Amino acid sequence: MTGLNIFASFFGGVFNSLSGGLSTGLDWIIYLLLVLACIAGLLLNLLGLPGIWLIVFGAIAHALYTGIGVGIGWSVIVALVVMGVLAEVIEFVAGAAGSKKAGGTKRGMVGAIVGGLVGGILGTPIFPIVGTIIGSIVGSFVGAFGVEALAGKTSGDSAKVGIGAAKGRALGILIKTAFGCAMAVLTLAAAFPLLQLQPATQPATTAQLHN
Image (cartoon, rainbow, N blue to C red; front, side):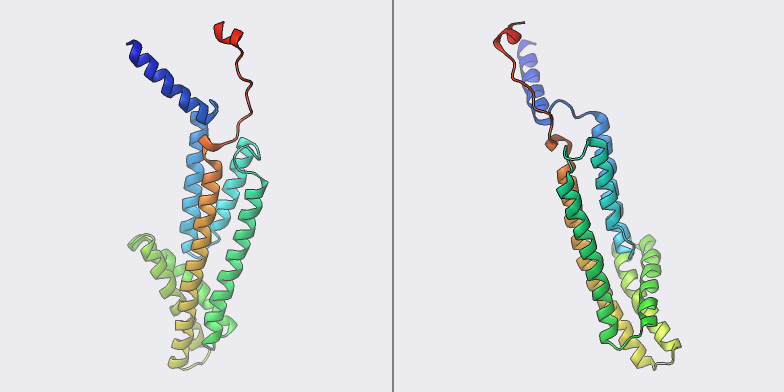
């Protein structure tokens, strides 16, 4: 039993030194909620919704809970906001460029956005994630094609705009998802309970050890 006690005491001390002795069950529950927020944000992103901002808000909420700088600091929050803005701009430019390059109008671009959102929602129950992506791309094509056709363009010209919108949508999803993954990794790494900065403790003196 003495050997087992020494073994348990040794590894317990190692764990407490890594965690600062302050990581509680509640810390891990809050961290798990942050993980779920990141996953939900990435899934919403595939639907064409601003899911990456859920990651940002989750990071801010976690920082407020633990204390800014303990895990997630101002540098991480600023980096997440900058990455989020860049992702949104790049996605918009990519989608607009695909439709415009094929001769699409502003109405066609709106049709592609709405169609992508509806297609992503309808595709998710069929095959989560993969169905979401495919549905979003197909929906962008259908939305742009339908609006341009109703506006009086020929089927051939409408199809070109639809294909351009679908390509732009695919590129936008790819780029924004890459940004979202990077943001999620940065957030979860900074917030990991065992890596959070804890107040330094004074080393025990010889007298304290004997007591």
